[in-house]
Length: 171
Image (cartoon, rainbow, N blue to C red):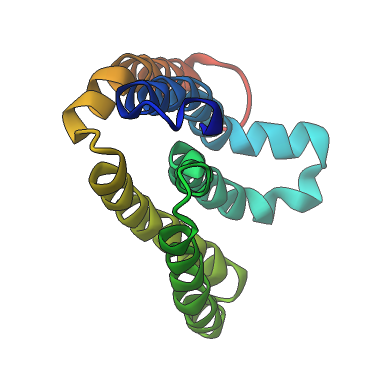
């Protein structure tokens, strides 16, 4: 982003393109992992690790939010606006720590994972708002760049869910 910082239109286009690539990579992989998590854990870690499946599923989905806006902080710094990036980072830490503490108190590791997921969702909204305001990119532009991989991921998820009962193995 630093290389195109001098041209606001090019910076906006670069961010939209970057978002499209990130969505292309970060939607199907975690969703696919979440859908086949029991099999992945069973094959890679063994039966005794099956209790971590729910954690893996929750954290995989949280990763979608985090990765989708990961470039927002880098872009702000490249634009010479480290203050909003710092404010967002501090906000994340200030909110995440109590959320995780409460999550652990209420539901152990699952509660912590849910807290991370909730925080990722909240920070997605915050980062999106900061980007829209700072780079002057519209939500519509970001959606236009992202809808195809999102739809493809939903089709993949539907196929996995539809075909799963037809496969041999545990029911």
